[in-house]
Length: 228
Image: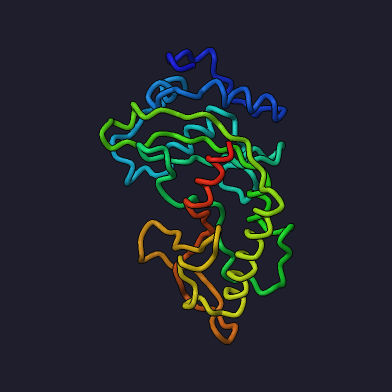
């Protein structure tokens, strides 16, 4: 596949976890340029305007089906796909977006039934080298990691989620910042600061505010890398 052989690419959805894992192993050590060539895509020179390109490329190559739905990318397998940019030292470069924060949620939510948990329960991590010294087409895909949170991980993630969603449901959006949460944090999620959506105010009223997303801290994804 790394040599641009389109006949080796199977873009239809994988039927089993083993099939998905085999595909992920097949693309390890490929460059973005070689991988993009297999599906007739072109790697952009500047990712500031194309932040979602690598995720879209991998979704297409690996056969993800969820699109923009709030479900795991490989819906039939219950597996989420997450890319993980690494700096030249092999450490996570940034926080990892997981799902949108439901800012208008008034109902009491269950951790095991929320969209965030459904995405966190089983993740296929695809690391890649983010090296400004190289053109993006020469960045390499790393070895995949198929991960589920341990009981200890889940306990911390759940505690973070409960604290953060508690503030959302009490209308205390102005109290939420990126410092809250040990593994999980809430950060703005929009193309620019002018984008607005609806959220709950202090008295339960609807207010205009910036969209937010749930993100995993780099310190947590570094632990996932170290364990693998």
